[in-house]
Structure formats: structure tokens, C-alpha cells
Image: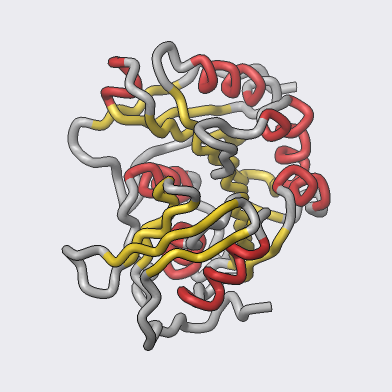
Length: 255
């Protein structure tokens, strides 16, 4: 298992190219505008922006939103975070670097996990497992943060969006912990509204962050939902860009 606290190395060989993985293929593309930066595409979908040796870089908006929600709950440091959906481990590496925390990245595709270990050498542990099974196996009250960034095509797999699953998440979190989910949604935000309804059965507070076109214009894009029994803020060191909106859900019912 990789040491979650060791300093990442910078790759010495050429790593751009296409690689077979269990779910299809992964492509690593060098960013022509930034020396040493790469985009990891999984089955032609951009999944991670990685600068090996520079874990403080978060290029994608939705990852900055997730980091802001983690910042907003003011967890004691160090804390323990589980990231469901590892891809290139950009966000787990950032959280480890920013808060000197213990991070576990969970990836279903074993070949992709091996590729990421070999090519990017992230400073976090990568576990090969199915996200739902892994969540149910977490010891009660043993983690502080759970991030869900799992997709099958444009959607989150249904088993990761049920009240039963949220109960497993809630049980796994320590008091004051936070669950943050990345959702792909479009006009009407039906998926986001359904997930909020389920989360509000368990968590006292929920909040949503997304871009203005997604929230108001019906464009498909990322919506980040956070849920906690601690009041949520969105004022971290990596805030949303100008023009992006933050909305609060109505007060939740806590069972």
C-alpha cells in the first residue's frame, strides 16, 4: 500500500498516451499550456487534471467546491477522508496536502488504479473496491469526510443514491463529519432534488453548489451537494469562481 503521507515524485518518463483498462481505455493528454500537467480521460471523458509533484493544484471547478465544503465544516486536523471514485487522485492528493490528513481513494477499475499508481504516484492510498460495498464496510463513526464522485456514463449509479446508502454513509461518519457528492444534472435538477430529499432524512444540514448555467439555465453540468449535522459554509481557501452560485436547501428533518 502506498504511504499516504509520503511526498509524491515527479515522473521522469513520457507518460502521455492511451492505455487499456478494465472498463475500456484511459488516455493521458499533456496540457500544452502548462508544463508538467496532464489530463486523464476515462473512456473519452475528462476525469482528472493532474500535475505530478504539485498536489495543491485543483483545476476543475467542482473539486474546488468540494474542497470549500470540507474547509467549511472546520474539522479537527488531521482527519480521515474516503474518496469514492479515485480516477487520477487529484482531489485526494489535494486534501492530503492541504490538511495533512489520511486519505483513502477507492477505485472500481483495478487496471486504472494501477495505471494511476505507476504513472502519477499519488501520495494517497488507493483501494480497489466497489463504492457501495466499501462504504457499508467502513467501521461506524470512523471517518470524517466521505466524497462520492462515481459515475456510470453521465449518471451516478443508482445504488449510491438511495436512503439505504445514505444511512451507511451517516453511520460511517464521526460527529461533525461531512458527506459531499458530485452529481451530473441538467434542466430541472431532478437528480439533485431527489438526492437532497434522501439526504434530508438523515442529515441536519444540506447545501448545493453549481454554476449559474446549470442552476438556472438547464445546462448539463456538475452539481455538488454537501450534507452534515454541522452547519455548512462555503468559504474555504479555494472558493468558487465569479459568476458561480451557491444555494441553501431548506431546513432538514433529522431522525
